[in-house]
Amino acid sequence: MTIGTSIFLIAVGAVLKFAVTATVAGISIQTAGVILMLVGVLGLVIGLFMLASQRRQGTREAVYEDRPLYR
Image 1 (cartoon, rainbow, N blue to C red):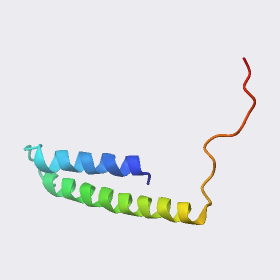
Image 2 (cartoon, one colour):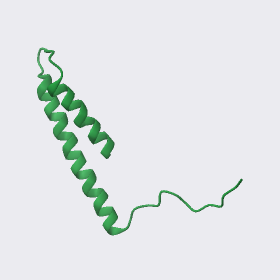
Image 3 (spheres, helix red, strand yellow):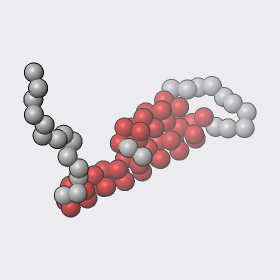
């Protein structure tokens, strides 16, 4: 799960928890929001930990390659 996906899950969970007042038979929308927020926070922590460990090891791939500039 990427950092962007984690932030998206946190945002959707917060909307379901705090902004939606509808009721559905058989499911609590507020509980689903809390679960999505927890999954998003967990994914964010794991993603940041993996990013930090890659930077420490120096195994992060280059984002760009040196190429000649053509005009």
